[in-house]
Image 1 (cartoon, helix red, strand yellow):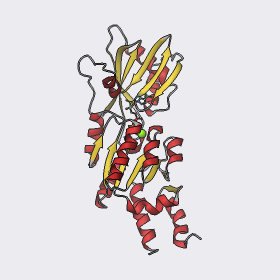
Image 2: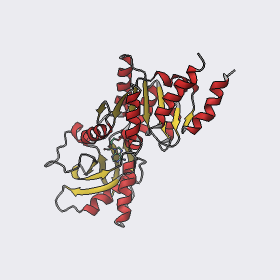
Image 3: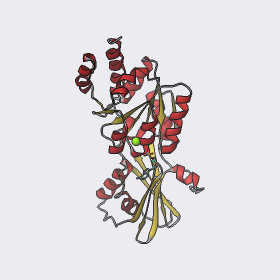
Image 4: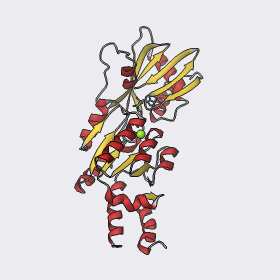
Amino acid sequence: AVPLVVARSTSLAAKYGLLIKNRNAFEDSRKITTVVFDKTGTLTMGKFEVSKVVPLKKGLEEGELIRMAAALEQKSEHPIASGILQKAKNLKIAIPPAADFKAITGEGVQATVEHKKVLVVSPGYLKENKITVPGDFKANDTETVVFVIIADELAGYIALSDEIRPESSGAIKALKQENIKSLLLTGDNLKVAASVSKTLGMDSFMAEVLPGQKQEKIKELQKKGEFVAMTGDGVNDAPALAQADIGIAVGSGSDIAAETAGIILVNSNPKDIVSLILFGKATYRKMI
Ligand code: ADP
Ligand code: MG
């Protein structure tokens, strides 16, 4: 039988914005020593707005760059896609169809548009494929940048901005008070990762991390003796959520993240992780 104090905890958990899918995850929450956070959609709102459109190819117009990028993004569910599609809508651009769509997980998207191969990808993808950007790309430290490649030619880039969730800072602070380390693991670029980590006072960060690498990093922490909780929202976070000792999905995120995690933050509020830990400690203390 389930001890009374534990049974009662389920309804109490709901009050704290927690959906406990796996009771062991709840019971083990008091052992957490490190919380690993995904950035986009987890510590930030995951609502991107296009702030700059910069063609790099001579004669190419901003509208054309958005038109091509939007063709691909209508098939993607990434928050970057919504930002680019919104921009196309604002500019009243008719979006052409895209064929052979393929997501390059953690790095971007690819498809054929008007018989041309088009990619919208991260700075990391350019580096890997040894594509150099003429001059430095001008983006603020807080902006996410994606590059548009049309017919094997670097056509331009789009900068997008997102907002840090108002509760994120308080969540990191409260974890620190409990002697729990916080680590940022993001697929986004180095500048943005550094800026978010610094703004929130996190212990460390890693940028341009691919989904498999997120999982590897968690394994590495576990080998060092850390008891790791991973918090994420994306399809790309699923392997890491499964690897972690406790997987915590953000309610507003993807179905795959929610299925993989043991606990769901119903209100998408990172501060509820702190409630989870304190509440877990209080619940199981009573049982000893
Ligand atoms: P995060 O870890 O911050 O949630 P992701 O792993 O989802 O980030 O994405 C990492 C990077 O891959 C993004 O910052 C972007 O550069 C690129 N990317 C992913 N999906 C898309 C997309 N649909 N369109 C353009 N770029 C994308
Ligand atoms: Mg994310």
